[in-house]
Amino acid sequence: MLIIAGSVYFMKPSPAELQKERAAQHQDSLKKAGILPAASATKTDTSKTVKQVIDTAALKSPFGASTVGTQKFVTLENDSVKIKLSTQGGRVYSVELKNYRTFDKKPLILFDGNQNSFGYTFAVGATTVKTNDRYFTPSATDLKVTGKDSSSVTMRLSYSATQYIDYIYTLKGDGYKLGFVIKPVGLDNVIANNSAINLDWATSARKQEMSLVPERQYTTVWFNKIGDGVDDISETKDDQKEIDGKLQWVAFKAHFFSSVLITKDGFSKSNLVVNTDTSNHNDIKQMKASLVLAREADGTYPMEFYFGPNRFSTLKPYSYDLQKLVYLGWGPLKLINRWAVLPVFQVLQNFNWNYGMIILALTIILKLVLSPLTYKSYLSMAKMRVLKPEMDEIKTKVGEDNPTLLQQEYLKLYKKAGVNPLGGCLPLLIQMPIVIAFFRFFPSLFELRGQSFLWMHDLSTYDSFITFGVSIPFIGDHLSLMCVLMTISTLIYTYFNNQISGVSGQMKYIGYITPVIFLGALNGYPSGLNYYYFLANMLTFLQQYIIRLMVDDKKIHAQIQENKKKPDDPKKKKSGFSAKMEEMMRNQQQLQAKKK
Figure 1: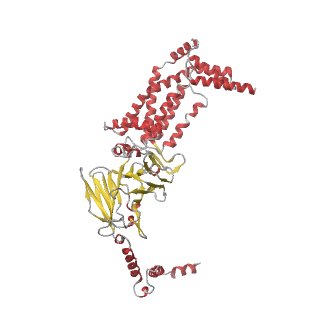
Figure 2: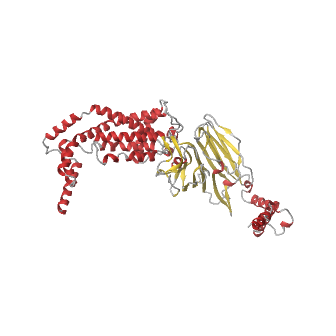
């Protein structure tokens, strides 16, 4: 083994010999292709000959001069963005959002150099040209735009002195939009099928926030299909979607920032892809879009880019429903967040308070609005608590072996006492959509990004006070302090709620399961969301304490006894619920009688 290992080491070819062998192999391949004459290798240096032949062949191809060049950069800049254009591909090389930083205080770059690509492919005869690989000539050097002015830079890909393709970029003095027009000149007889172009756009979204997991959760490709509205491909898994209808825009959306490509008349055919490559821990997801764009009557292909934050108030002034990139939930949740919660939040913002105080004010307003329902729910539970001794007597007389008869006797008692057994549940059910709506509202709220309150350094992410170093099932790699406080307050709330409602037996333990589940589910969610739920619990304690001072159990008991003395009103129409319950009881009794 030593002899074999030694011979391999000492007899291996030198780097010069390896280079010579590779050059010879390259030369042979050129000979077989007919590019290089058979005797050329004996007359001149191999590497020099190969390079000369390749350069000559490339220069003689269509747009051949664009195959050779050096990558240079032109910067377009206003107060909001700093956009770097590359002569290689004539594309947007990187975009820096000047007013924002990453979680670790570095410049916030939406693109990262060679991690993104943009261009289109076309045919000139038998040659396929990809603009992303060609070198363009810029019309200007770096430009700084201010005020109401606008400036433009043209990147030119030349075929001849009078035949070329221009990429025209225009930036205004403010805002996050970059105008972009592709303008072919004199190439109708050169480029095949020039009525529409196939655009390929791809990027690798980089880590910008504290935690990779939630950032991946909210990063994917979004689009606005004309006539069908805004939608996205899967956020939770790798996905691909082909769309035949027209798309108004396509967005590479991260958690708090987006890159959007917009066209007025729509992309006629699209293929959208998103996938996660976990090999690079700084990459969130890879996103790609293949788009077909028809030519305008003037021979151009006009588009726009939006590079900026996913803030509702920033996106709303722009056209084409860009504000729907801020996901506020589905169905009724979206309506609650869009037309109730968001307007109140925006009004509170005008006071320039700390966002922790704004969340507190928002919670107080919500509790005041819902206080009639809370009072009604508490009153109903108090009535059920007062009736419990009588229900226990019925249970002792009837026994537990006949649940149908037991429920029927309960219903008779409820009817005589004038108590609705669902009176405590219905108000809570009405409040549930609002509680769930906040579950979508806070994670999408750009305004909380980077905002601190108390010990919470960033209300848009979790506030870990214990980091485990490893991921623990159900919990994760940390414990969020506000989530723990929220869970403790919910457990206390459940305990007192059981005391109020008079729940006993196994049922009283079921309520303790949900807070424990929430601990695992919400541990990785924004501290602002857990802070809201904590405040909601604290204010509910206060509400119940005040209501308890207003509600007298003795008076409720007396009122129930008075109701029981009243004769039944034959004209009083039964509620649909009561009628269905009685019918169900009768049917069950008949079935039991048949079985006996």
